[in-house]
Amino acid sequence: MKALSLAFIKVYQKEEQVQCFAPGRVNLIGEHIDYNGGYVLPYAIPLGVSCAASRRNDRMIQLYSCQYPADGIVTYHLDDLTLKGSWADYPVSVIKVLLSLGYAVDEGVQLMFDSSLPVGAGLSSSAAIEVAVLSALKELFSLSITNKQAALICQWAENRFMGVNSGIMDPFVSVLGQKNSAVLLHTDTLDYRYIPLGDVAVVIVNSGVKHSLAASAYNQRRQECMQAAKDLGVSSLCSLTPEAFEQKKHLITNPVSLKRAYHAVYENDRTIRAAKALEQQDWLSFGQLMTASHISLRDAFEVSCEELDFLAEQALHWPGVYGARMTGGGFGGCTVNLMAPSAAESFSAALGQWYEQRFGFRPAVYICAAGHTGINFVP
Image (cartoon, rainbow, N blue to C red; front, side, top):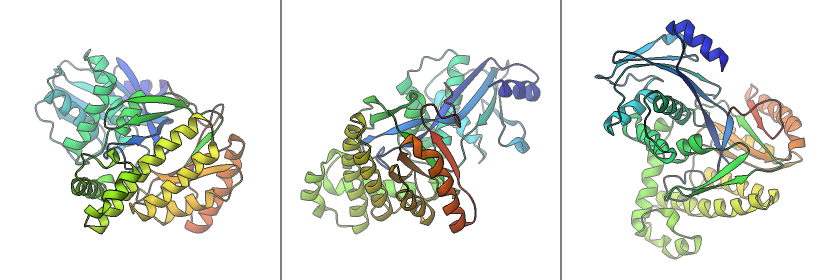
């Protein structure tokens, strides 16, 4: 993080007072469940967003991104936080939520961000920048905010100001994720526990197809799920077991809503079973559940695409791969692959070659495994 400190001095002509890091995440299983009241199983990855910050003695908010240097210093005023349609809207939305809740952010700040997360890849870059800025503001202004409250504040920033009805999973795991452990989170109660990954590699493959949750029918999928829950007379789809759903599914008259509900109910059940498999280090069972999840996301929830389907299908042909699926909101982004650590390097090279032959370019691959030297987890 020394490079960020040097950049802060160069841009703002002063040293930062605090520096914080928030990881991105990959969801191993439990996709589109965090707004349906069920279980998700995300994992905080070594990539993320760093934020350096310092207070000002006026009410000006200054933001700078190392990824968008051409934008220069983006400036707001605490008395006028009108969003400008840029990357800076994400941290500013967090400030807007803090002010609406009565937190004493009563002076201006200078903020600088640096990210190792690919934008639009479904690895939660937006949540990471929100959590990073909230962590910095919490230290700068001595705000009394618990970890769960921090996750909720970041979710509200997306829901209220960014126009995305996202669930709690992304900010929650960015705040509370632990190295080499997945988080089994019940998104309705926010009860959670850690499950060590053990001797397995998580390999993330970026399709290079960028998605935008707001523009990719994410909100539409959520509305379809809400309608299905209303038809079934339940508060959330994941309150139903598969058996209970089969008895009541005739109440859903819209065939599209029925497909969405089918995915949510059975995906929640898959996640519960996957968590048990992970605890037992039953990689084959876990992988089978991952593969079933991808098929459901492709056919019932209809959020996959040609590139993601290709990556998921080809991965299963490689020795040592237990399971593969798309991850994130969909319509692009990444696949997540679970495999024996010894298979990670050869798999990455082979899949990259196959993808290039099909789509004309090599995908970015991120290997997350204990002891792997390609990526080091930043605490």
